[in-house]
Length: 377
Image (spheres, helix red, strand yellow):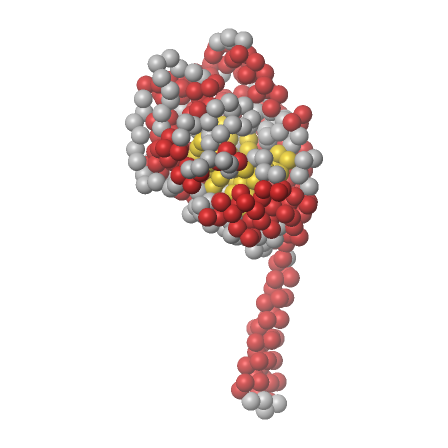
């Protein structure tokens, strides 16, 4: 139909005896009209003009006051970083979203929204709060065309509900053994609820990606210890459905300072070899969609002490790259953790790939969760 309309227009213009320049102007107007019609037919809201830099590392931002948006996002822009910014329902409104997106545009950064729920609803995404969490994503997606026309997409942080994290921390502080904690996690498995939530996230992935937005997930590193026997025991125990969903990217949070804090080992600290071990398996299972989240640069929820210096984080990044993780699949937690650091730029330097050997301690850390997998069989 479009070709026929164009042909008739050219014939009419030629018969009228217009000069070539007039014909050219007429043709230009016709083509512009056809382009507009095609855009309206497919729906403008389904083709966002996303600012997208898939080759850049990303950085997470969990607590950015509105007054600091320009300063912090400008730093990310200078450092060639994509930014995943927290949007917690009840704490952030359309005014914050509009200011955030304007700041991202001024800084020239690709922006992904990191949705969250109030703490009494679990904060992170999981099987327990799937309905409320995905309703919040739908709400943000409805606001995005007007408030954030160049939004890249959404990043789902898939972790246990915050109250279960607090219970686990209390058990650990009270001296509970790894076996006791493992059995507590296994006792919480509800396969029917898990599968129902998986179906909800899978449907949401189709909605979000159908609108042209990127839809990614970041999850606990322990989920990568679940792949040896073909089941989902650890994912079930952590309430974190990941498999069977059309994610654009799947990353695993390998924060070795958190391992030092929550799973202390006698004889030393975990090394970049822990990143080597996980990154190897992530690439094997997820290929180019697989990624790693590294850090931490400072404190955060459940984090008391960050990495000691920039060199430690750069070593982790280099180790991930050596195992085949592309820069665009590496995320750093967090942007606010760099505030006040005189060498902030050094923390987000992209190094060349550099292998890190896996120490005995690093292997022991993974063995703890692989044992949980075996206990569940």
